Length: 426
Ligand code: NAD
Image (cartoon, rainbow, N blue to C red; front, side):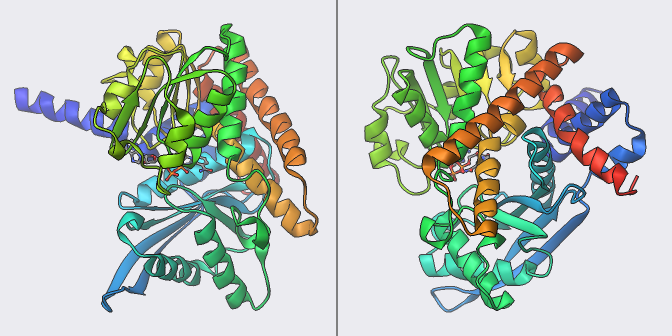
C-alpha cells in the first residue's frame, strides 16, 4: 500500500515535469475558456509535422558519430513556422514538441505572421571542436532541407547555438538552394544579413516586461534586488540591462552554481569573464547552488536557464514579488498555482521571452525587403510590440480572472485557432 502511494506520488511528479503534457493541459484550458470545441484542441495539442533525423559526422579522431536531431512544426495556419534550434544532451522529441507549441503561442501573443517551430540536436557542444560543430550544423540542414525554407519554416538560435552556427546553416541551405538565401534563418551575424539588436532582443523583451510588471506592483527598478538564473545569451544581457537601470543584481548563476552578494555583484566584471557557453561561476570558490539562488531574498527573480526550475518543492520558498520567465518552461504548472496564491506576479515565458522571436521576425522582414534598419528603429518597434503583448495578457488576466499564464495562452492560441478555422481545417 505504501509502495502504491509512493508510485502514485512519483507518477504525479513525473507528470508535472513533463513539459509537453503540462503545456497541453494549459492549451486545453485556454481553448475551453475561449469556447472552442474539442477538435480545435485535438489539432493543436501536437505539431502538425515532426521530423526525426540521423546526422552522420566525421569527428576529429576520424571516427563517424551519428547524432539525432528533430524539427517540429506546430501549426502553419497563420504563416510559416519559426523557432530556434537547440544543441543540448538533454534534447528530446517531447521537449522539442513542447517548445514548438510555445513558439506558436509567442507568435500569437506578439501578433507575428508565424506559427511555431522548434529544432534540436542531441549533442554537447561543450565537448566538441569548431569543425565538429560545423559538421553537425551542416548535416542537420541537409537532413531537414525539404521541410524548411524562408516561406516554410525559419530556424534561429536557442540554447548552445549562436550566430556562427546560424551562418553555417545559412550557407549550407544556400548551397542546396543554389542561391543566397539569408531569410532561411535568423540570428545571423550582421554581415550576413543579421539584424541590429537580435543578440540582446530576448533580454530587451524581458526587461520591458519587468518594467511593466514593476509598475503594476509599485516597485521602483532603481534599487530593486534582482536575481538571474542562467548567464547565457538571455541571462547575461538581462543582468547587464537591470544593472544599467540602477537595479542591484544580487545573484546570478550558470550550470555550475550561483554567485550571491547582497550588496550587488560586479556585472561588468562577470560579463568580461564569462565564456561563450555562459559559464563564469567556475572561476569562484564561494558559490551557492542553483536551488539556493532561486530562494534568495529579492524583488525580481528571472529564471533564464532551463525548464522545471521552480516546482512544487521550492515554489513556496520563493521570496520575489515578481517572477519573469526569460527561459522556456522554468516553472511547473503546480508551482504557477503556488506562486499565484502567494500573490507573486508571474510573467510567463510565452510573453516574457517573445523579444527574441520578434526581432527574428524583423530580421526576416529586412532580409525579404533587402533594406536594413538601425538599432534605434529595431528597439522602438520591439518596445511597441512587447508593451502591446503585455497589456493584452494583463488585461485578459484581470477581465477573465485567470493567472497570467492561462491569460497568455488564451491570447496566444486564439489567432492560430481562428486561422485554422478560416482555412477550413476545423
Ligand atoms: P545559453 O545557452 O546562451 O545560456 C544558458 C545558460 O543556462 C548558461 O549560463 C548555462 O550555464 C545555464 N544552464 C544550463 N544548464 C543549467 C542548469 N542545469 N542549471 C542552471 N543553469 C544552467 O541559452 P539562452 O539562449 O540564454 O537561453 C536560456 C533560456 O532562454 C532557454 O530556456 C531558452 O529557450 C530561452 N530563450 C532564449 C532565447 C534567445 O534568444 N536566446 C529566446 C527565447 C527564449
